[in-house]
Length: 179
Image (cartoon, rainbow, N blue to C red; front, top):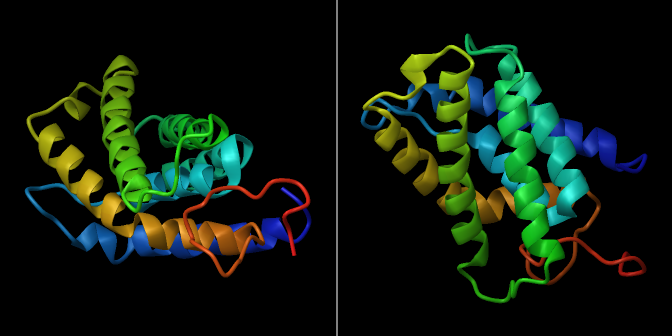
C-alpha cells in the first residue's frame, strides 16, 4: 500500500472492527451473527486486487483474532485466503459489469470463508466449530455480506484512493488510471 492508502485503510478497518465487535455481535439470527471482517477482506480484493485483498484480509483477521477465543491467526488465515481469491477474480478479467457481480462474489466468498474457518478450526483442535449451527452461520454471513458488498467495496475504493464517478464495483484501477 502506498503512503496515503495506509491511514485510510486503517480507518476503514477500525470502523468495521468496532461495528463488528459492538453492533453486529448483538444481531443474532438462528444463533449466528454476521461477519463484516470477512466481508471487508473480500471487498478489499475486489477493490484493490490480490495484494491489497491479502493485506487487508490478514490485518483485519488478525485484529479480530485479538478478541476471539479460537486459535490466534485463524481469522487472519481465512481473511487472507478470501481476500486473495476475490482479487484473483478481478485479475483474471472476469466480467464485472453485471450488477450481481459484487453481491455474488461477496456471498460466495463469505460462504467459503465461514466453511474454511470451521474446518480449519476443527483441524486446529476446536471441534465445536463444526456444529449444527454452521449452516445458520453460512446463511447469515452470506446474506449480510452479499447485501453490504457494494458498501464495503466503496469503503475500500475510498481507502485505496480510487474514488471515481463510475461504479463502485469495477475493481482495481490500472496504472495510469488514477486522477
